[in-house]
Length: 137
Image 1 (cartoon, rainbow, N blue to C red):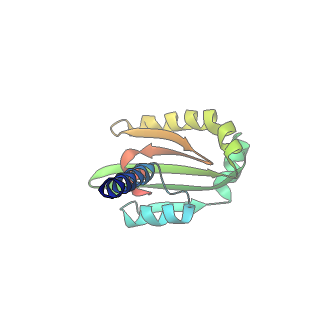
Image 2: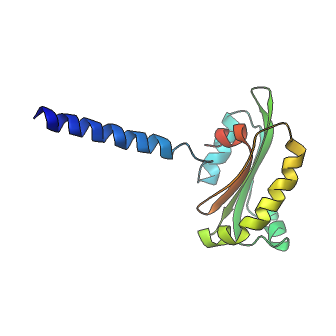
Image 3: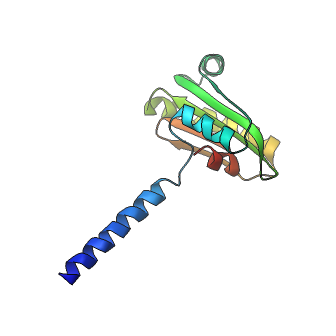
């Protein structure tokens, strides 16, 4: 009986560890929640756009963008910037990955002093400073 309880306890700890590690990724997958989190965490100039920016990106060759959340501000006296592109599906994000990486590299030049991240997660591509990405969770 004691061994069974120990095994169950170890299994529960392992499951909790996996869940906590899975939640340490990028910004929120829901654009409205990511925007709310940014505003709550000090990125006051954060907006969600589902018309103009996706249209401009389509002209630039980055197609099937559902919406874009972007923000700039200060978190703990450090500059913070983030851009999150939410695509209609994972395949569209995969197709746009190379072009978005180039755009992120261009913006990185303006933020040389900060830790810069550019990643893809499912149907979302995001780039910006680590502190802003953490704030968008």
